[in-house]
Image 1 (cartoon, rainbow, N blue to C red):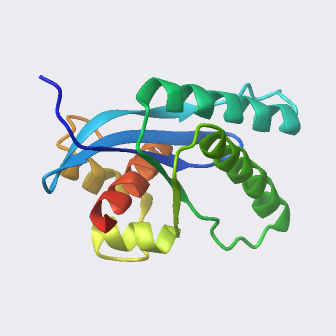
Image 2 (cartoon, one colour):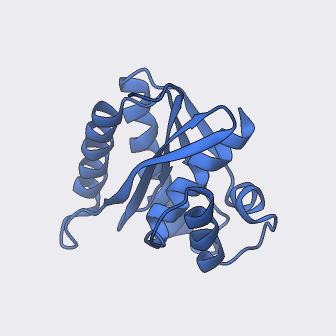
Length: 159
């Protein structure tokens, strides 16, 4: 029996590891569908990494057919170069969503942490554990995948 609901794909962008997590929200509850990492080869030049991430996000959208994508916004970084690279990766994710006609919503890291743990300054391990509890997972998801699931859960709490 297929459960009807609203399928949300969360994305935690990164040029080394981009986390993704897909959930189904329905009747005030959530169900975990899948999560994981998009990890381009470490020796791949940056512009090719961005293309790789774009292609993989397009494949995930085709695979899971989400009703929307929830994307983590850029955190304020002291390293301008890192922030610029993250902006390129976010642009690739946004382009993949637009290409597939999938609505995109953005959430700040503070809002995601507040939504998941009740504290805007929560630590990574707290996010991981709360995601495990909220989605009734047997194991704690990897950090970037947990962050992506947290963004999806934040959107589920919002709609």
